[in-house]
Length: 446
Image 1: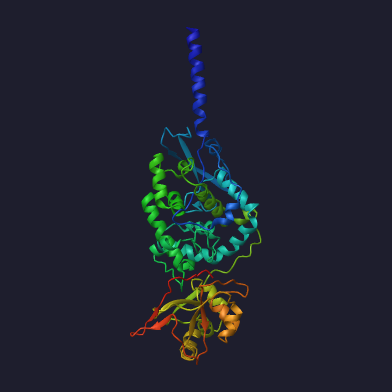
Image 2: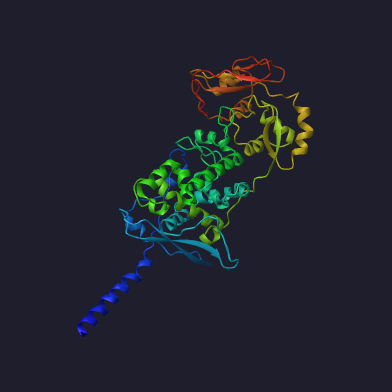
């Protein structure tokens, strides 16, 4: 009898010991990719990130920034997974004790992968990250406001942080462009114009509105902001297929398998790490950041083919300032067939513009002709041929003296106000609209 009691006691003790360790195995990992919406994270691709087996992810961290308290939310996962035996994970939401309010409006998970990217941003990628931080404050207030108006979490702006470092001119090998790194097809799908005259993917306001619509659609499909972010990176169908294949709607679980690319697996941890640092940079060792002033502007409407130089002159400011506010223009001129194109001007300059523009427009109406580059031609040679100054010619075509040109490129030649335009590519219709006669082959890579 005593022997039976002893055996029962030993079994009970061993069982209790096993059960007490269940909660210690948190399943927290990271990932993310964008196939039909490529990104321009070449800069982050240098981060020394190696694929790890599932056991690596089991070593999740309990790191919590100083002054925060941790709130744990257990979530059951599907059983019978191929690469892990964990049956739950814990999400840690950060709360500021002093205000008793959440600092973030998206879930924040702290794990080994997030900490790895925090360390990367603090060390090997520090110089770039400082640049991105300085640029971020120029655009974050505008973007957060647009997201708020459209009912989206404001902290989703940090997707743009890892997509482009808030650079309107960012361009990827996959031909994704702008702060939100839309490819042409997806940009047009969400209302962005992409043509020879303008690329609205580079417009911070218009591209943010397009990103808001896209992210909202993704969230309605997945009901999870992590999956929405992953879908933004990899394409929604890639995530749908992954969910079907592994029978889970948990982003961190999907990241354990090989189906998603490494870029996608790293995407959400990068976003979380960037958000944590950007919201409290001094806590992570980023001090003396030279932040750019928040973007402020007014809008006016101008006729078709209005040159940016004319807008600048009417505003009594520089062409460079007008270009910085309107990065979507590819030819230094508003597009044809749009009689009232909306253009941004410096805040507080609207009165100057309205007073000066009407007087300047008839005298300095933008006029140009087009030139198709032939073999052996140079920029200075073309300028001499048309008897135009080189600098305005380069400025109009967004080129530098050192820029290379090739056969088939189309260049705009600025004409003096008293010279008549010879219709090469542009010809007036009977109704007064401008029609573009596009050649069969044209290299637009400036």
